[in-house]
Image (cartoon, rainbow, N blue to C red; front, side):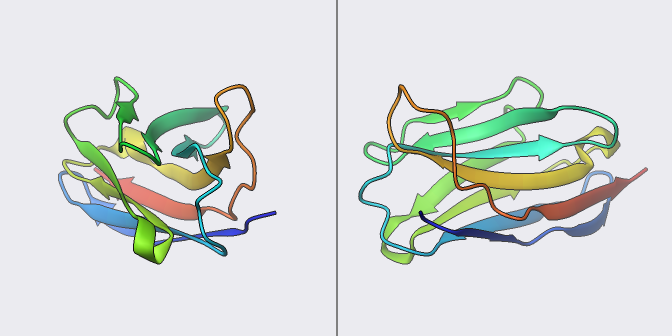
Length: 119
């Protein structure tokens, strides 16, 4: 099973930016899609963004559209999440995961990286 390691989180003021990275432990040729999710304190985990590995089709939650950008570097087995114009409600633990086919659930969740946005 592929292992994922997230990094890039931190403390930032509202309006600031962060770039998260998610590195996969093996070649991602068997991956259909990779996604970013987040869990805010006291809330359920929610979808943030996803990118289709072949074709780079991108999907975003309405709450982050136009502020966040997902991208990937296949040569580095890495997915990025560029987060701009951060808001306090973006605070949470951010996770990445892989989806091996459109009929399977996301799997291989990373350990998460904390993002804290102060007002």
